[in-house]
Image (cartoon, rainbow, N blue to C red):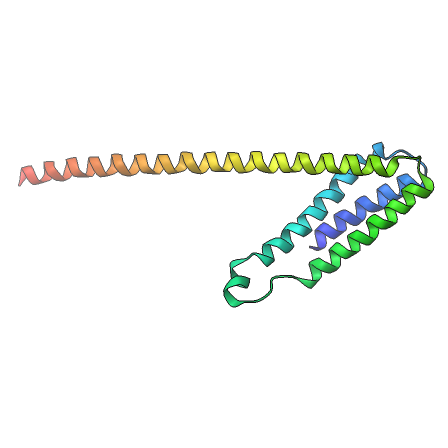
Length: 152
């Protein structure tokens, strides 16, 4: 959680400096991607804790106050960035920021789906390979066992 906040804060500082200097945010696209990634990672951690088997098993609420605080901090920083974009930057900068941010989110979602598809393929391949090895091993074991019984 600390690493995600550090990544978000670092990206926020760079984007904030770009906006305050009157530069276009196109130069800080990598930092915006880091901000989005950190925010999504924090949300995912909170969701994992909320939906974990341990919290359901013991009846505890999985909502972590730390994640809530960090997400509220991110929300405040986003409000600050929006006001800075409206004060110092060219008109439409905040809209460009939101557009790029949504593009990054869509791209990350596609990458996650591709990764899940690849993992499912690997699991499928491993399952069929293990099944093949079990069948071949069982068949060869039966053949050798029958040959052993014939020699008795």
